[in-house]
Structure formats: C-alpha cells, structure tokens
Image (cartoon, rainbow, N blue to C red; front, side, top):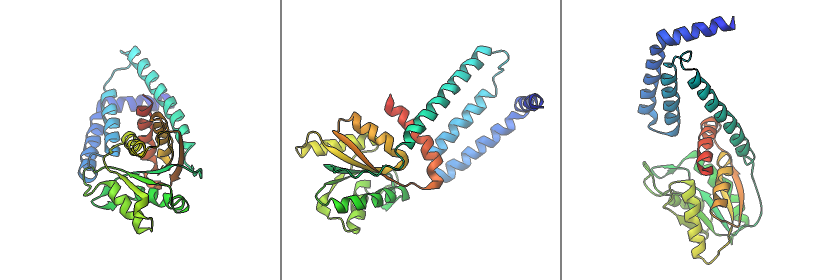
Length: 251
C-alpha cells in the first residue's frame, strides 16, 4: 500500500509536477506583493526553488546524488535539533544579577512606531531598570528601510514615556545586526573607561542564546539576560530564522 502510494506520487511529480511549480510561483508573487522581501518570503523561496530543482532529478540514474542529498538533509536535521535545543535553554531567562550596563536590542519600527516585538523587549526591561536606577541603559538599533528615525531614538522615547530618566539612557543608533548591536555598544562602554563590563541583555526569548553567544565573542566579562516574550504567531518563523542566524554566528 505504502509503496504504491509512493509510486503514484512519483508519477504525478514526474508528469504533472509543473502544476505544483506554477502554484508555488504564484504564491511567491502573492507573498512578494503583500509582504515584501522579508525572511519568511526568502525561506519560502528557498523551499520552492529546492522542490522545483529536486523533483526534476532522476534518482534511479543518479544514486550517488541521492545518497549525497540524504546525507546533507540528515546533517541539516541533526544540526537543527541541536541548535533549537540550545535556543530553548534561554527562552525563559530572567536573571537578576547586578550588571554594569543594560543593553536592549532593537527589533524594527514602522515609521516611528515600535514593532510589537520591540515593545515587548522594552516592557521586559522596565522592572530591572526601575530597580537599578544607577545602571546606564544602552538602547541599540540603527535606521533601516521604512524607518523614519533610528530604532534607538524610538526606544529611548518609549522608555522616557514610561518614566525612565533620559540621563540613564544612552543611544547606539548605527547598528543593523546583533553583532553590530553588541560590538558598537561595547565601544560606547569602553569609551566610558570600563574595560571589562558585565552586561544585562534584553531581547526576545528566541534571540537570547545567540545574543549571549555573540556577546561572549565580543569579550564582555559576563552576559546576563532578560528574555522578553515574543508573539506566538511569529514563533515558528522566528525559530527557523534563529537557526540560520546561530549557524552564521558559529562560523
């Protein structure tokens, strides 16, 4: 039964697979129009292109190619499980150690309005900032497409609206990645005369493991963390994106 179904599927893909190709391409055009070239659309494009290419291969004639692909997929699956397990270890991070600086990582704005993810990061930082009024807070994020002001300025404005003293907040407004967030923030800290800072990172739950890892690579003395909750409907795509981001950080 199972073998006959597999044969039917193979026959359909060989003879009518172009129908699926057209459906995938139509979906891609639709996504591009309504969502733009974001990570989710890029990931869909990768999957669609992989399917279109792989279904055209005659695996009975190319046995070694088939075995090679199985090895690649196997390595990918194992690495995905390992990295996602590491990400899960930091999902609920809420450390209370005293740090020299708090660093809140940016996560996009629309015009001047905070994204939901960024607002959640800022909200998660408030209790710690209020109980440590002498600890400087670095809000880290540059200005990208569709953003009328740097993320750092939008973040500072929000914290001030929540009652945080402007003098406690330092803006790092040039970064465009997690690596730059932490590298540029360290330059600000070093300029203050502190050579081996202990930092409290505030970022989304799915993003904490990678952020701490990159912070360690940048030579911070200690990396503590407060994980902000992230929107549930975005969790699957964020976890997939985090896999690729973590692999890149490891390399």
